[in-house]
Image: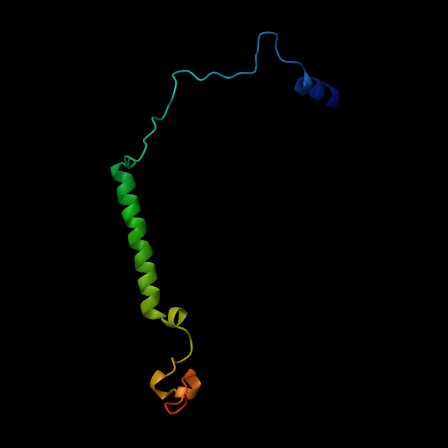
Length: 94
């Protein structure tokens, strides 16, 4: 059984076959250099719905769980930092 399958797979090509496939009719999709693609109405509607849902999802979660974006810890008060902590030399130092 394996020998018959092997013969079918490895048999030589037909006598008239050259191995070159020729598609009929030339180019099927015309090239559009530096032009926007033509979108159908359903593609525009679907893309608008998908992007609307994406922004709804982002803003909903940002509003209801801002710690995911802003962090879980309180932001430090920069007015409480000293010049020494910021690496600023004293005014009288030269």
